[in-house]
Length: 347
Ligand code: 13P
Ligand code: SF4
Image 1 (cartoon, rainbow, N blue to C red):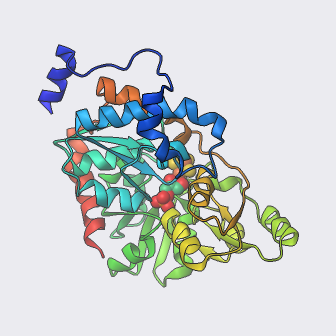
Image 2 (cartoon, helix red, strand yellow):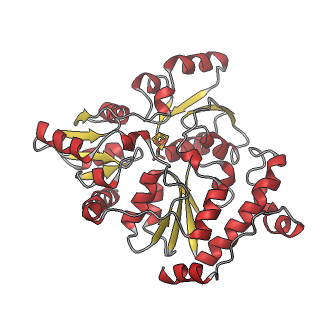
Image 3 (cartoon, protein in one colour):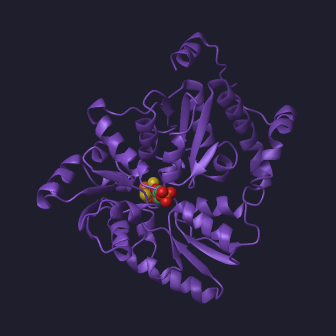
């Protein structure tokens, strides 16, 4: 990685011209990419995205970088520049498989931290260090220590939507895609499940293990109400409702299917519903709609303000400057990594 940094210092890596233009050459290189997002990105926007995408692809090759993008990223990122897309579990797994010396995380900070934990020797970039998460904000390492005192000899299962410092206080991590499996893998009668209260309550409906929850919530998913789902169902009698388990229990009770973002995408791919409502962050519907023309998406639009801090120009700048870089406090890195790796060992 040092060589990349030296290259920046020497000015070997060509910075983009200050104004990127949609020239004939740019069109020849990247217009084919537009086909992947034609149904969700208006044609009038393409001349703005195309030169950014062209420049990112050039910088990515020069830096030998990969872009890991979460399912909530906007279509021009998700379909335009990402090398690997997925839910938190898939991104964590795929982060262990890449040989690229530079990882750009198109997602929120805890995701980039997980990539760094699993790739301590690589440069992990996040275009905006302020891309946080209300769940990660909801709990501190001291809170976890207090929970352990209150419930002695009870393992701590920590959702990956947390800081590395909180992960370091935990026995094992989980994602929304494997939470039930992880809880049951411990063979305990009772677990402390942090920090998402609603995911914890959902897990409790799927297992006999007693779940002690914390009071963290996702600011995007907690806004959905059962009444809006009931109203949508009344409006469209063929509607399939699929929801993320970060939603409140009364909302999940109205859903036909509950799963992680990738499991929700899998539902659309396998079931080919005529009409679907994805009860989650709204860019997901755009990303899936681009590849599912047979399905009509009903879109209540709840945006994650943190995910939306990641933009094409931010990705381009982070590749140009090799920053901002994500680092993990060495005092917590080994323990946090152990909790993530223990999760990845559970099949
Ligand atoms: P997934 O792991 O299901 O993609 O969820 C991550 C997330 O932040 C959902 O809000
Ligand atoms: Fe965090 Fe919710 Fe945003 Fe996911 S959608 S990153 S849980 S605030």
